Image (cartoon, rainbow, N blue to C red; front, side, top):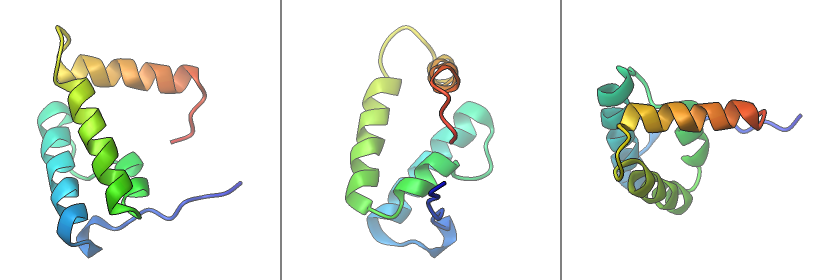
Amino acid sequence: MTTIRLVDPSAVAGKTKEIFDAVLRRERRVFGATAVSNIWRCMGHSGDYLAANWERSRALMQRGRFTPLQRELIATAVSVANACHY
């Protein structure tokens, strides 16, 4: 099985660091997380890809009648239903 090396958040700079910091702030606020989750660390290899997905995630997760936690729970349930391994 192919694997992707996770980017170490302490070893990044520039745009990637800014996004990792923003991700951690959101994940800390919503989940009480203490680290950037692996899905974001996988995307950290490409700053442009990471930025595009961060903007998409923010757009999807900030609107509507569900709370951010409810949205994340729905996303997790869909990932489980689709047998995602991340």
